[in-house]
Image 1 (cartoon, rainbow, N blue to C red):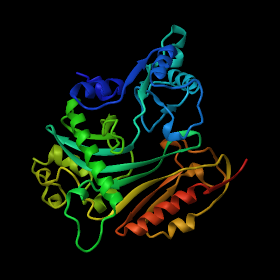
Image 2: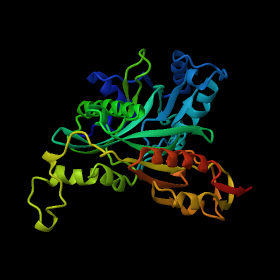
Image 3: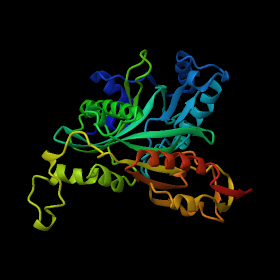
Image 4: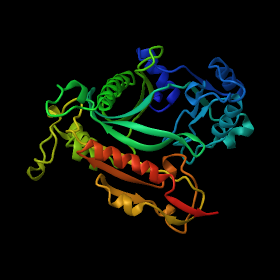
Length: 376
């Protein structure tokens, strides 16, 4: 049969909560009135008060199905929520087939896509890629999202940074000091990975590949340490193999083959390439290397007349590969990036030296703000 909790974000959260995991408060709203009612219980004001961002009450407003933060909003006022609700309710349902009708088409019959409101979980979002074999869940990679509020959106991807979740479990090295930030990332990522493994048990996912997202907050003792964003029964939607293969030493796709086919005799010529599932650790080690996938964010609107910083990027020690998409080349009309689908391109970063890696990472973030020169 079909387990709707593996795809529907409302039921996913509900099932994980009943399993004993900490989850956010939520309400599935069929009407705007229901959405407003829930928002009031979350202390959302009529209008934004102008307080510091970290102190503003907010709720997440999103469809029950979706990908890449598409139509995912953060409401800090009831007036914002009103517009966000209408946008989602009148949009097509993600993954619908050609025989399905959109919410807008159903509106005349009073049928609209339900809108999910959830308590905003403050903290850091981690992505955990897991391969499962007969209920045994092994982590392929853990990533720390760098999402920032730009271009009128609250959660625009800027980078996806690989985290070594075993670092805080290892004895301190004798030849150098480990930066405390890396130890924190390791501790948080490890907690996120453990939570994700339990979420897979809650959803009875026993085989295959999943891309899981969890919010971690170890600073505020009034909220749970870990809470679910979502479980996705698919691969991480990016080219992760070059980075994980060069750091961890293997990747999720090879792990998946080992899970499904590792017990079978394979051709001799590929014996040295195949992974032994039993020999794979539960949690990966990045071997002291640093890596990240950078999302190129466009901050401009108009016709591209120049692309700045490309030569500097090419010369950076940490940059392994880079692509600026065809739609953002000179002469193209561009819009500001608001989600993954509107990214201007990508970079792969990797380095054995943390200082160089961090410096290149920070400089890329600076370059992106003025990278695309346009004419209106």
